[in-house]
Image (cartoon, rainbow, N blue to C red):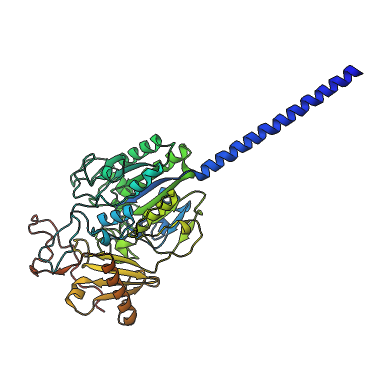
Length: 500
């Protein structure tokens, strides 16, 4: 009996020890899982910023204007994140828009308001405003320079266009490596006679991006993926183009078969990046942005329902496609109608990575409260544009301000001369195509908004246009003193728009 009792006691003790150890092991595992969850929640997200070139607002399928352009991977970013219906570039042209993205500042403040190096238009009515011909000043803090101290690897792949020229050299001042990017592939648009099957470097840009992601999968990274699509020259594989020519309504001015093929190639490359993030289990901790630097070239592809296009401050030149996904933070399938602008990216990323940037000249606002669904407005009442230049693809030099649902455009040729019909006023919410000029019906609002625009120009120390003493009506649209014979230059719309 004594032996049997002792045996039973031993069994009970062993079971008790096993039970206690099991509880401890489970607790340790739970603690380990909880620790991992905390680490994942506290880890800084990767950022993949995909920038299209001259892609119109109506060419993004998620904006539901046309079904002609096939963008399933761009649509995936939109459906898994947030679409911004009223997203703007701070400039209707390349270089200043990109400077705004990189710094969070208006191009007028940076004195970088035209593409680099730009044209002089020596005989135009107005002398063009001076700009920084050396490109983005080195003293400006870029997104890459801002995130690097927070432990981020930084990579630039594709078009830069923020230096005095495109003769990129490793480490040259003004090129990407001097502006905070460690891993750099700098490319330029193709020549007209290019025979390359990847003329716009889509595959090359994507391959380097994927290599960068693989190399830095165990640390946070910022990948700036800057495509040349759909900038001129328009060129793609003939079979690819023909597939778009056989789609319904290729004759519609909104639908361009060559652009369709170019955009689909870019979209497929974006799919490769998204697949790589999934393969490396990085999707849940990666913010993906899709954006275009400015509106499309209206002479190749109508921007309808928007008016105008690239190099114009009409909506077709400055309203751009924008979608952002941030798993676990941004509600999938959400839509934001708040007007946002390229200036907002810098402060948004600064808040996301936990960087306190003490610079009162940053013009943008963080979108984080909007992305988290905590705000339905931003603390500002106006957005501004200043394009004091002539451009072969544009209208006249102009500035603009949007306040609420209203947008005012000032035409500098008329205001500087003190003429009538200086401004156009539109209700953008009701008249997205800017066809109904309300200036004569609402003169007080027009006057208020014009004064507000002038005050902003003064506040940011914007360079202004002046009357040109060398004005020659017969040569006014000649871009340079000498221009190659036979090369077009009169794309500029010479008729003054919206007189009434």
